[in-house]
Amino acid sequence: MHSSNHIRNILVFFCGLFCLLEFCFYISGVLFVLLVWGVDYLDFNAINPSVSDFPMRLWPTIFQYISKWWGDPKLFGIANSLKLWGSFFAPIGLVCLVAWNLRHVLIDWRPFKKKESLHGDSRWASERDIRKIGLRSRRGILLGKDQRGYLVADGYQHALLFAPTGSGKGVGFVIPNLLFWEDSVIVHDVKLENYDLTSGWRKKIGQEVYVWNPAQPDGISHCYNPLDWISKKPGQMVDDVQKIANLIMPEQDFWYNEARSLFVG
Image 1 (cartoon, helix red, strand yellow):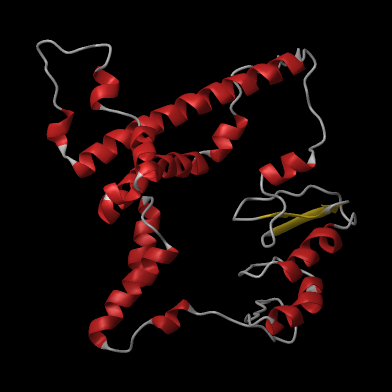
Image 2 (cartoon, rainbow, N blue to C red; image 1 turned 45 degrees about the horizontal axis):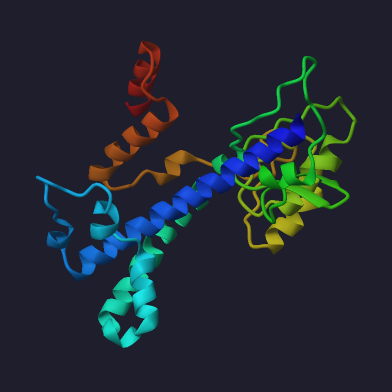
């Protein structure tokens, strides 16, 4: 059943491709006529049109013009030759552009699909599945490794990791990503183990590394005070305070509004 569906899908694909190419060639012929002779050439006798020869008489396919050009290119001249080949490639290029943007949808599209099993069809991902969902990127979140290389998710997806205490989450995931991830990152590092092992590398690649540890016994910690951004100019000071208050306590309930007013005051 699976092989028969596969053959049917291939036949549908080639039939659709043939119809699409025929449509492109037909549109190319119309486009060439419009570029060379204008809309008037597409006029026809609406009272008594000849249904049999109307499409080919008024809107020939592009190959009829290409065959004439091939016989005597000088007959067309440079300008019409450019219009001819531009008309030929324009619809095909447009279709290719649309197909490229919809490539993931087209790859997954199957008019004849295998029926789902009663007990499910779950399986391990193949290399094609891995590349299809973009897990062979050069930059991103380092998820793991298999026989063919690293599994890297490009972009800004969410990753959720569940593992018991002492199972190697830090060594197997956090630390490798702190050494692999090149963009900004915030780490909840209670024991400062990740900082000790990776801060040197992140400084080496040009990043600024800060440790905010207000519970440090010796008081050594980076700090951040949003009030430092407030201008000392009297005219700008109130506006800066209001902006910071809106950031810290956004518009919500009554108590937040009153707290913001108290803060501004």
